[in-house]
Amino acid sequence: MMRHKSPTPEQLSGFLSVKAIAALYFPCYLTSRSQMKALQKKLNENSTLIQRLNDTGFTVNSTWFTPQQVDLLFDEWGNPDYNIRKNRTDR
Image 1 (cartoon, helix red, strand yellow):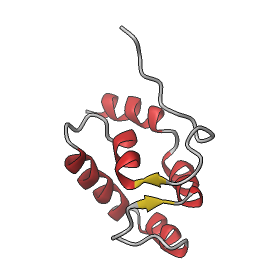
Image 2 (spheres, helix red, strand yellow):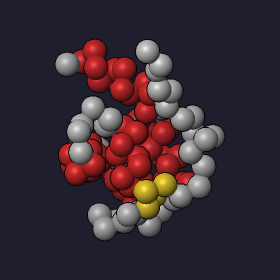
Image 3 (cartoon, helix red, strand yellow):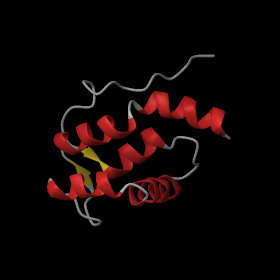
C-alpha cells in the first residue's frame, strides 16, 4: 500500500484555502464540512493562536490563509503528517 506523505511547510508556500488546511490536519473526517468544523474547534481552543492569526488579518469569515498565517499554524501545530499520526494514537 502506498503511503501518502504530507507536504512540508516549504511545499505549502503561498496562499492556501481554509478547506485545504482543514483537509491536511483532519483527513480522517469524511467531508470537508466536518474537517472545517474540526479546524474551527481546534482554533477556538487556542486563544493565543487566534489572536496571532487575527493580528495578521485572519477573521472567522476568511477563506484563505496567507503564507504568514500558514507559518503560524505550522509553528503552533507542527507538520500535519505528525499530527495525523499523533491523533491516531490518542484515540
